[in-house]
Amino acid sequence: MHEHIADICRRFAKLGYLAIAPELFARQGDPSSFGTIQELQAKLISKVPDDQVMADLDAATAWAKANGGNPSRLAITGFCWGGRITWLYAAHSQQVKAGVAWYGQLVGEPTPIKPRNPVDLAGQLKVPVLGLYGGKDTGITQEQVEKMKAALAASSDPFAKASTFVVYPESGHAFNADYRPSYREADAKDGWQRCLAWFKQHGV
Image 1 (cartoon, helix red, strand yellow):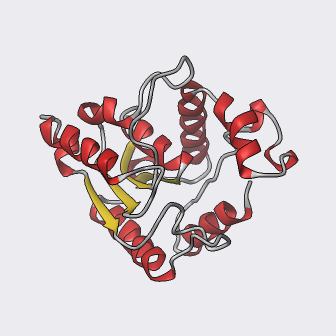
Image 2 (spheres, rainbow, N blue to C red; image 1 turned 135 degrees about the horizontal axis):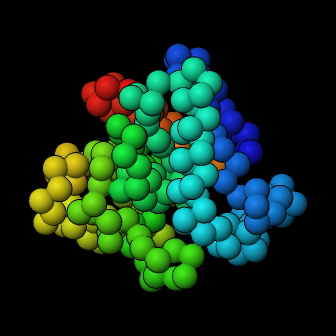
């Protein structure tokens, strides 16, 4: 578990949440054994099937329920890869109440292990999602954000209608990652407060 994600988990815990950061790559290998993010992405993360992740998140939900968590106040948030997963889980789980996706991939070519992307599931959301994205993100462009907005707007799904985006014009990708040069303190702090407010608004 990367220290930044562990720290995010602690931040939630200090606010009174039962916070869980599951090891979603463990079956495919040891993330700490790779020297660069690029190598990690190519040799491990790209091999993790979406169906496996959804099942593992269901298992984390069941664990929380069995260990003092309140399943009627369940939320999910994630960053980059986890941001995409947040959108997917919002279309998968009947229990989650709110999602916050930080700069997660929205569109892409389907593959056997990633058969659908958030834009394909915009009309199937079971929970409203807040998307926090950087206006200068070169990987997840504003064109892609607009495609997702259009897909949400075209849906009759009430949760799609309730979902929304906040775009930080001067931020790029990973603006919340305080250990990387991409970190933008003001936008990261604003996003964190918006995340907490979104959860509170939806009963989490």
